[in-house]
Length: 126
Image 1 (cartoon, rainbow, N blue to C red):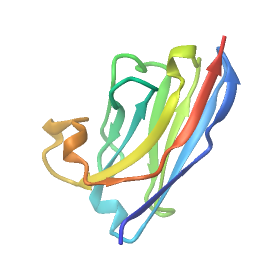
Image 2: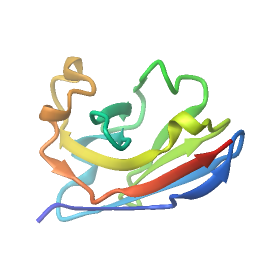
Image 3: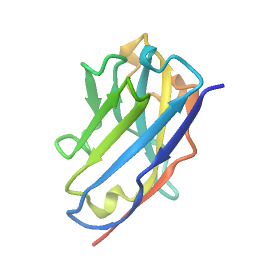
């Protein structure tokens, strides 16, 4: 079955960087769109970044544009999120998610992603 396992979270100071990874297994990784979401306590899950199956097209939430970079290595079945210039408001549980490679226009609608990882915590202190 589909399995997504995130890693790389931790605690950093404001302005620092982290790189999240998501290891995928159990499906044809290169045929799926992949995304990162986050959820802070008491808030709704928020879409952060989306990448198409080949890695040539990306989409970012306005809140992270210019600071975060999503990428993928299809040979390693791994998704990445490079996070720079981190702010306290980036503190959240970060999740990777997968959906079949169609309907790009759905972008980061959570309900369009059937597969989710368990999450990795990112904490940014001021």
